[in-house]
Image (tube, rainbow, N blue to C red; front, side, top):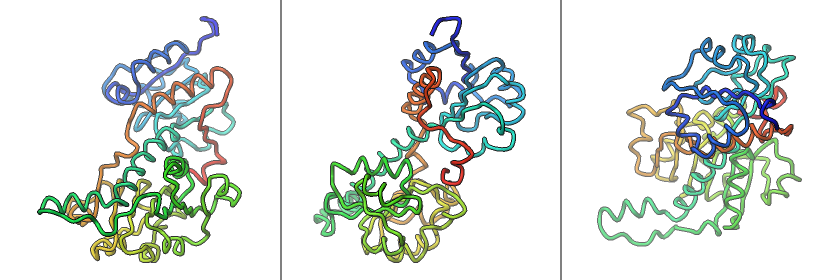
Length: 332
């Protein structure tokens, strides 16, 4: 690409977040792709400020809580051809104002999925080995080896949602060779065989088989309290429950009941509401590890995907995860 043909790229991410998302090397890589305008402030721009900043840009890059391609912004920035979201969900960007516009919207959900999958793998290993309960017991004195500890390789792992995260978890589990069951109405039997998993049509029945149940479904109307009282009650005594998706996917009252009975051990990175109330039992129960939505945090793997996507786009290729109107029914 010659110098005069280089695209103008506008990054409207405030400096503190940008430094979390982009390594110096990736910033330099991006500057090699075009004429880059960097937002130099520490707070988010208004839509009006972003519209002025992105005027004449072909590529816009935003992130969590920044302005996005709404009608006002697009009307003032007609040259935009790619909007790269250095974050996950882009559903809020869609509407009638996008119809007929030649604008590609890409998300960094794949990068976030890898991060969430890493957290999930840690929780699966720690849960199966009973590492945290044993450590708690050792604070009170000499603790025996947990009688019900098991290796991941000898466990049955149930995955709810063959999403980007669910598939990343499957990949990370592959070296351990556990038995993996998946509940996802959108997953075909052929795809399940390709992934090396067993598809289950009934979530409650799948739960009866699981040593671990991990949730990776998007938050949609048909997934509201998908992990129901019946599903939680079907889990084996001593099962590990992991939720890194959305708290709304779980009947939290039923989960608390099962946890109070001591039947399950839970790793919860999300709750409903979020954050959990100060007096929530999830903050006090000894068989819960409650974290602050850290599984898919603002890590530099996201900035790397941003630059890779912009490079693909400017070379005439498709960014890694383009979202269209047709995708909205199945993505978060």
